[in-house]
Image (tube, rainbow, N blue to C red; front, side, top):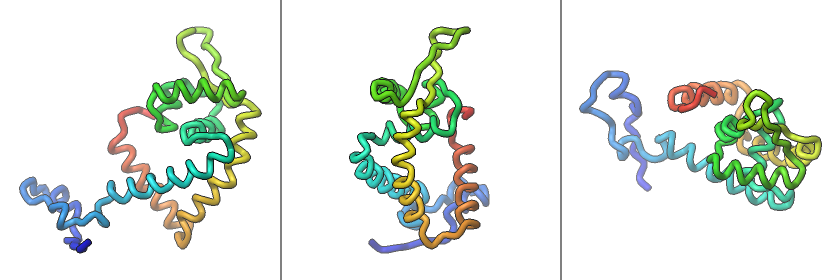
Length: 169
C-alpha cells in the first residue's frame, strides 16, 4: 500500500478552512487514528478471547469482572458503559456470571427496579487467576514504550473519550 501523508491531519480544523479538508489518501490509513485504534483493539480482543478459553470466561465476562474488581457496586447501565457491552449482552453475561457464583445482583431498597451488581469472592478469585495473563498482554503491547509515553498516551485517550462520550461516566 502506497503511503502518502501530508503531515496536517487536523489542518482544516486548526485553520478553520471548511473547504480544504485533507483526503483519506493524503492522510493514509497508517496515520488515521480511528483505523489504528480499531486494529489495535481488534487484535487485543482476539488475543484475549484465545487466552480466556482456558479460564471458562468470555470477553464480556472478563470485562465485567475487570470493572467490578475495581468498583464497589454498579448498576447494569453503569456496568454496560464501563465494560463497553450492549445492555442486552450485559444482561445475558450477568445471568451467566451469577450462575457461576461470580457476581451478585441486589435490588435497591428505594427502587426495586434498580439492581446493584457486585463481584463475589469467587468472581474476584476468577478474575485474579486471569489477571496475570491480561497484564502480561498489556506489557507485550507496550513493549519499548516507557512510563512517561504511556501516561501521555492514556492522557490523550482520556481527552478523546471526553470529546466523543455519550454518558456522563
